[in-house]
Length: 210
Image (tube, rainbow, N blue to C red):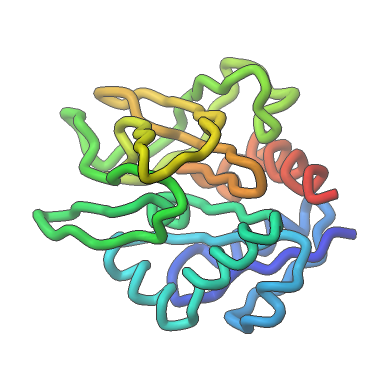
């Protein structure tokens, strides 16, 4: 049974994530303990609310360093919602720019849509080699609640990394709905609120833990 830690840094639907992971067979602990977060088979980084507040909470428990150390050792991390957004270089909300974890290049900004927040069920466009979406039909819907997202995928000379598998969705304009890059995966939507589709995705992630 895979040992999974849901990182508690004061943000996110911790118990919902815990229940969803238990449902698909994981041995789950919700904690901010550094050693547990480093040694588990898979680390889940949830997040709700403002980018800046989430980054402040994450740094308080040294979560940014935990993520960095796990990825340096090839150990899986899954970001969810704002837990995905903070993996990028920066976030801009209400004109305020906040530095993120910098695992992926790019900026999280307000959705370009007539109706914000984007709240409800939506389909996604996943690449063929996706691990997270393996076995899921193209018309499968996932549950989103967000006003900000990565609206484009940026690759720069400062980030000489293989191009990740990027999944897109549309609300007004295109935005990044999920990304997979070696041990680092993330979803803008909430798998724990996405019913059987979310359970299938979490099962795929657990299987990839090895």
